[in-house]
Image (tube, rainbow, N blue to C red; front, side):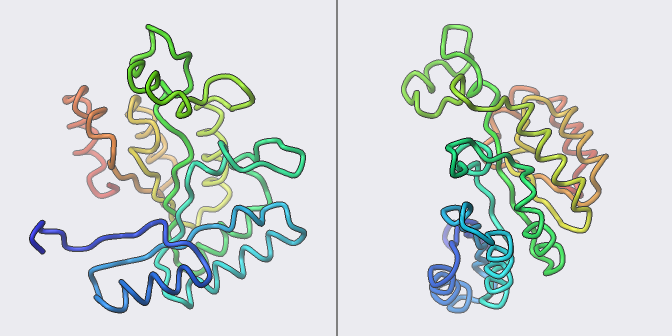
Length: 221
């Protein structure tokens, strides 16, 4: 109240008993002030029958009071299959989960990429050189990581396959450097919305374009 915060959304509320505890301690203890999202069970992704298990976890999360599903960039950039290969954002084993979220009216808050600079060499031409030089583990350049464009294309294929599911595409659609592309995604997919957290600086360096973007899509932000 002192900070004039009306409601706080805990997007990383976990699943199972962790989710139940978070809902009990916050959502139920302070109605209307906290909303808790569940998360996929990434560590179980390579188990037999994972797709069915994940749907059951989402359904239980709904019964336990979850208000949505949060997908971190774990998907596409961290979680790997049993052979050690990165699992793609549009891997079909997640399709039942996306469908379940639409059926249960649980919005999916999805963050599957990072600023473009995180996918480029850490050199004097990288606009985030100081940041990445201090935190080289934040970089997704090289190795077997996909490009930013590949990740966003896979995300868009997921959204296209699940038109009844609402996707909250975080951090200005994960492409705050190119608002025209974000606008095209909003035009193409009527069920998605974006938010601007942690990307105010990106919007601030393109004030005219940002103003036009925010005015045009004010009902989707």
